[in-house]
Image (cartoon, rainbow, N blue to C red; front, side):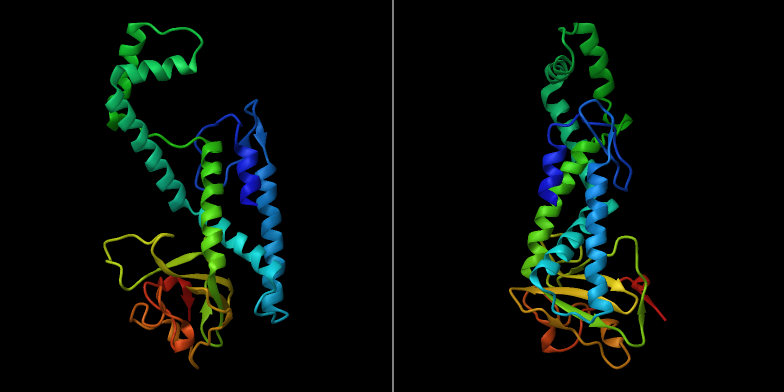
Length: 269
């Protein structure tokens, strides 16, 4: 699906910056195009059917085709979170300002002439330079289509990492889960310094709640999918010792369950 997303966006006219949620792309005339929204809605429907098989029909491990569908859905959920969008905007903002600062008025002239058909005057360049060189006065955001293309690339990367992991299904008998709008949680490797962020390059595991009483925990790569038992009172997932049993090198079959830095909001009494 991420390949289709990239093909659809490439070559389309860029639009204005989008909010945190998915914004419709724009076609070559600048009009709204719902194609990507429809693709994502279809993926949501397919994933919902797979989740129903897991919860209602107790299907686990998943057949290859169902696993691929759910893997794409997890990758899409990761790529759509507001944090990723904000990070992409920050990169775009810093990159443009650095190019302007390094290139000076010549870079401003180049950009202005690239947008128009006629040469620009020195007065126009000077006026634009005065505005653009005041870096604290504005903030650059990715156009809609650029954001969607970046999202497609992020989905492709996340999908490969998700599919390479072993998937462990954890069912809860007493504790129940709160289902957030953005259900994909990356868990920190205990060997990583706390000052570093957690991303696709250094996460230890992924937790994805799929029901009030079930979650998929994606752990060590190249392992087999299986069951990840909670303790009798479901407290094994609430231990205060971060990643005692899950890390890049660990496997949940060794006993226990991943813990911190789990957010308390994931759990309800």
